[in-house]
Length: 433
Image (tube, rainbow, N blue to C red):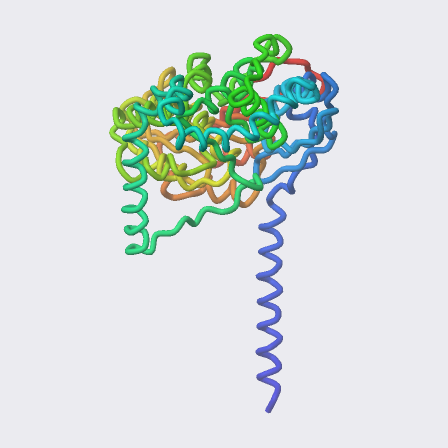
């Protein structure tokens, strides 16, 4: 009487083993995360020089390389090649500010700066006219942005009520950084002093490097409230860098010349010219991961995609991103598309699928752009390449880094034309891309 049940169990077990065998075969069809060396991904001048050395082994998080930097100034972690370049370019600035920090004159100015807030508060009550005179250099920012500050406060309250009513939530995952940088758009001149030091050092005033950020804060305090002069000769030592991939020199100068509030007003106007207004813009500016530098950079990449639909949706996604490396990757992907839009064929509309910027050209063909240090064939790549909503007569994938031979083979088999920018081979001393 029990034989049929036993037979059924054997059959079910056999079918389960067969299914598991198929799953294992499918899994084995993908590449394992590759073992990479720093020399496989970056030019020789970034691997070693100026006292720094990169760890030989590089691991991948997704398609982004995680670099470990060892230097006399400390150890740093850089997710992605762009942040690696920035961190290395910041080392001379750290060295210079650390040296200045040890001087007696700087220590005296910093001590004076520490007492300055209390003295300023007392002056406000005893001599308001003198207090206003002491911030005259920042009056333009005070007048120009006061209305914007009040408006932003009211809108934040209104948007908060709307979120409660609609149960809106930020579902973004955690970012790589332990904390978001905090920057002030003050009318008193502190931020101006910070930007002056940043210009002299040829660095981003809104860097996320925690060590450099602290040193820059101290230097700004010593100058603003302690009358310590900015050393304008330091930039000769530090190598100039572009703070955002694809940012031109004029855009770089903006973050040195304008306060955060003025940059926000300028970027808001540029977004409005693109037809992007309202809540997406307000949420964009509220994201503390998107510094004034990155605000300017993302607006610039969207501007390059002239007359392309879908740019507002991209801004909405950026507003909830919690990773600097992810935001920079988005800018890089958009710039890849913008170059294609300008030099190859114009695109009509734009969307973001995971981290891939996807656009449809006016002839119906499709072009996608991905910021990746090393793109290899795994389940994520296969799922994207086979998506039914990406079917088109012709499909092109632009990759900012390198694709593995296997990934190239599989993508081309599925009808994709792949264009990767390539990366330097081991020992090849080339300039950054």
